[in-house]
Image (cartoon, rainbow, N blue to C red):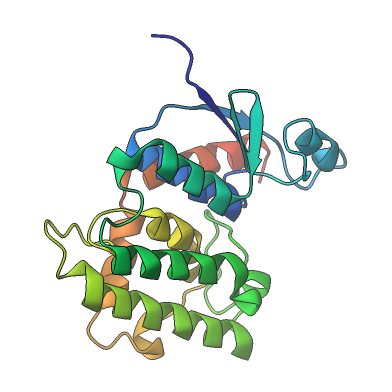
Length: 226
């Protein structure tokens, strides 16, 4: 077998929430790629990123001599190249809602990002529970519950994801699931009165692809003495 057509440039797996998103989408969809890792929080991080990404930010997907930067742009490109993987729902309304949910994650929830940054291997219950971060978390729970109720449970062959089967929307929210676990966010207190959000979190945290990422994060941090 030849080399994969894709190289995905990512940051440290413990911290790089944006890297997790396209990495998870490619793994779950079974799209082969080679990883190029850049260490974050180093003096030369920006310079290293600029070798692969014109924006100087990662992740970046290298394909046919091109660099596609930004997690959502990478995911959209993959959906275009591999329509059979169904990274967006087939139904136009469901697809529009999935794109809306992904875009909201892409541009929103600033307090949650700031106060509960991704730290996969740590357990910091109660930390970062600012008013703004919890308001953002409440909106996430509301969104998960609404999408599952409207598009998940009614989808043929429901697998438990936001739109029945795994989509880019799930990849976009995967880092939030880890944040809720790391910082001990009780989703039941944020409107999850029937356990829909908790069940969804358990599903995402148990994905073989996510478990692979998590194990790599542990190994990387152990190797760095963290």
